[in-house]
Amino acid sequence: MPMEWRDWYDALAKPSWTPAPATIGLIWSILYPVILVTFGWVFLRAASGRLPWTVALPFALNLAANLLFTPIQFRLRNLPLAAADILVVLTTIPWMMAAVWRHHPWVALAQLPYLAWVAIATVLQLAITAWNR
Image 1 (cartoon, rainbow, N blue to C red):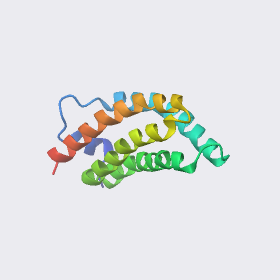
Image 2 (cartoon, helix red, strand yellow; image 1 turned 180 degrees about the horizontal axis):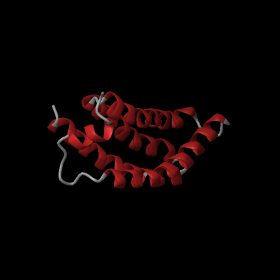
Image 3 (tube, rainbow, N blue to C red; image 1 turned 60 degrees about the vertical axis):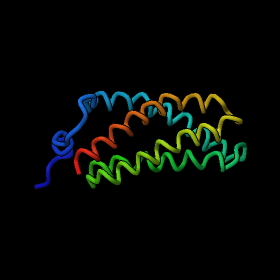
Image 4 (cartoon, helix red, strand yellow; image 1 turned 135 degrees about the vertical axis):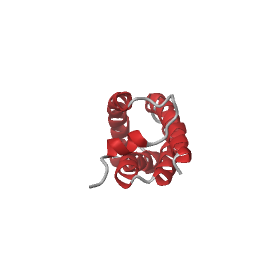
């Protein structure tokens, strides 16, 4: 019988500053509504022709990479691929912010907490990946 994802994650070597899983869940429960509203705004505006699809592209790439992280990390348990994925998430956030700024600066500014959290999560993921080769 395979090890449960939580037991697997708990057994990994992690930095001392690693947030508790409950803290990580709380942070995402705050960020996901912001993501839903802002990404939804961008996608609806692009679909209605009021925003170029080139603005929506980094949002779409970010969303896809964000949604893929959990299955890669916890189902596949592939730390290097999860590290590559979170780097995509991280690098698309400034791209999203720059792309949308001229059209809807509030959407760009609303990404700042997301950017801050993903930057921390990326450093954490890279450390976990390096420490568990």
